[in-house]
Every structure is written in C-alpha cells, then in structure tokens.
Image 1 (cartoon, rainbow, N blue to C red):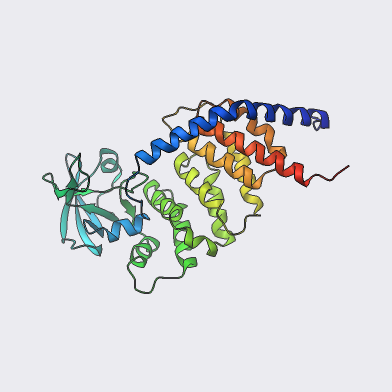
Image 2 (cartoon, rainbow, N blue to C red):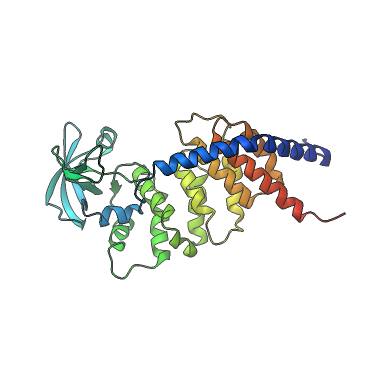
Length: 322
C-alpha cells in the first residue's frame, strides 16, 4: 500500500515548484508578450456565434435539404425542404470538401449553409460571385463544414436566432447541450462553438446540462480543440463551486503528457485545463502541474507557472497561524 507523502515531501515539492516558477517567469513573460503582439497583428473581424453568422450574413444561405445525388468531383445536389436564410432555390448543387463528400449519405436530409460568393485573396472584404459555383461554408473560428444532422433541436436552433421573440435561454441551452452530445462531429462542433460565444446563456445552465459538458471534456475521443473550448465555457458557469469541474480537470491532466506535437490542439487543451485547475483546485494539484513547467509549448509553461503560484498562495493565505 502506498503511504501518503509526508509534510516534508510536500513542502519540498512546493518549494521546488516555487523556485522553478521564479526562474522561468521572465522568459514566459517575454514569450507571452510576443504571442499577444502576434495575435493582435493578425486580428480579423470579430467572430460571431455561428448560428448568427450563418443566418445573418447576407451572402449566406441556409436550408434543410435532402441530398439526392452525388456528382463527382465533390459535388452534391440538394433539394430544398425548408429555407432558414436567404433565397434558397428548390434544387442546388454544392461544392464541398473530399472528407465531407465521402461522409455524406444520399437520400438523407441535412441542414446546410452555403454561399455563391468568394473573396479576393488580398482584399478579403472584396466579394464577387464564385465562378466555380456555390460552395458549402465552414464554422468560422473552428473550420468544420456547415453540414449538420437534421434534428428537431437543430431546426429549433436555426429558427430561434431569427425570431422576434427569442426563446428562453434554458431552452436554447438544452438544445445545444443535447446536440453537442451527439456522435456527429460537425453537429457537435457547431453546438460547442455556439455555446463558447454565447456566454449570456450560462446563467441558465442546469446540472443535467453541465453533466453533458463534463462528459465531453473528459472524453479522449472528442476533438481536443472542442474540449478546450468547453473548459473555457465551464469556468464561466455561475456556480463556480461545482466539484465536477475540478475532478474533470484532474482527469484531463492525467491523460496529457507535457511534450506536444505543436501542430495539434493538445497545448490548447492543456492550457485551458491548467488554468481551470487554478480556479478550482488546491495545492494538492501542484505536483501534477510541475511536469508541465518543462513543456515544449510556451503557453502551457506560462499557464503552469501562474497556476502553481495561485494554488500555493491561496492555500498559504488559508492556512491557520501557528
């Protein structure tokens, strides 16, 4: 049986963590400033919630339509069943990417967003009709194609953003969390990004809906970027004392290694998890964070430094005087 670490061992671990954080702080601050300047220089127009972007952009069209024919290369004919935005024709042939083309099932009904226009490569605001014909668009800020399962919840969500009398937040949350729990990756991505950009809904979050979020956060089969998005949402929940979030973060940390393939979204997931631990954890979590001080991802190192200091200082202030 393993014995609990002695006070001496715990103190040594904490002292080592403090020494490492001090040594790395200057480098991390420099890296953080560089990343901030880079992101500011590359900033584009604000990213809107995808439901608003799809239905509110005058260049976009949205419909529920049946996929009636696959046309090579990577084109599909849809027949309109219901229009949600724009002047949707009764029948339209859309271009889409190879993976989505392969996944699409003929005779199945989908909700799809598309456009007839394209942009000048150098002047993004310059629009003109695409000579190659209409194409399926993507979820801005994530990149997944706008091809979604046709479910009652999805129809409700697309209709809700255009209503003069918006539905209650709890009903929108119920639809979003049910859709993000579905196996279809594109439908899940839409629901997660919508929730990420609709913080106004979170005050109405109920325990059952929070449990759906927790299940996705800890599921290794779910895309890492979406899990990171959900952690950002979870730390903003109105009830910040929920134990499930702390336990979820610990489970995610146990799944991760400090060295990443930087082209993946592993660093983003690690950063979101480590920052969430700072809000909901304790000094008991410091030992799990120390390996991330040696990560090859600068943002992960910065998050680990800051979170370790927060956890140690918080428990230090809370400790009784002797």
